[in-house]
Length: 292
Ligand SMILES: Cc1cc2nc3c(=O)[nH]c(=O)nc-3n(C[C@H](O)[C@H](O)[C@H](O)COP(=O)(O)OP(=O)(O)OC[C@H]3O[C@@H](n4cnc5c(N)ncnc54)[C@H](O)[C@@H]3O)c2cc1C
Image 1: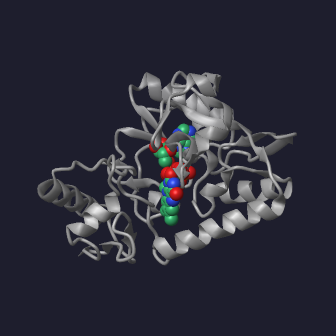
Image 2: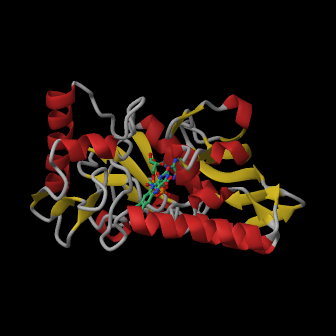
Image 3: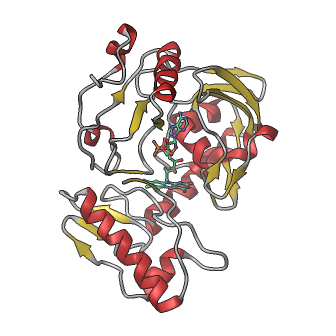
């Protein structure tokens, strides 16, 4: 257990496990401060203790967008063991942040509530998707948000209406740990939702590498460009360093072919950025979160 935390309650939330176990990419080592709380009150305690220690929290959902490297100065909080719930009232839905997007879309379909089908096939939790303002095919998750509840940086629980949050291209101004999200969904026939989700999953399977773990798009698309196309034009498709590879299927994806390390993936990221800048004078911006 980390020295910065000595409160009794936190002992139950601290865990001594490799982050690899939680990483969608299958990469990660031991973190100095890793917590897996079971209650919202535990999150509040961890967050206030973190602020007092002048460190930053780093919430983790499905870790489908995080490359774990150096985590020394971070206090990592997993959403995994917090109770899950989903309450529906007409087309207003209140859902815990650790709900899987896929399960959510599927359950809402049964209630003829749609809208989020564009996220079918995205291996995220609701909280991570909201924090990143996940989107695809012209839709963003923020289009359907009414409010969110967060454990704020001071440990207090606050509710924010959508208008109080800045949502941008794969980013948001949310600064705390999201605990629940209020959505307003669109009434839609079940068959339509099913057909749309199936079409999107089929498209993803053709376009994206699903046979090896990845973090989705490594870089954001620069204005008027597709990052994957720029990387491909630099001749980097299939480039391999150690166990990591720039996908042969889609050059904006890095896949773990089995035993990739943080260093392998980071070296590929650096190469993609430097080659695209050298040949096209375009500076790529990371979409994934790299803890280095
Ligand atoms: C195969 C594949 C396909 C993908 N397709 C898409 C796509 O179409 N569109 C898209 O936008 N993304 C896509 N992604 C990327 C990724 O799934 C999304 O960014 C997703 O929103 C991340 O959710 P997560 O739960 O995994 O978050 P994590 O990876 O765990 O975290 C991502 C960020 O959110 C923060 N966060 C997580 N949980 C919370 C919380 N409870 N409170 C506050 N902050 C939190 C983290 O601190 C981190 O900064 C894809 C990834 C893969 C592997």
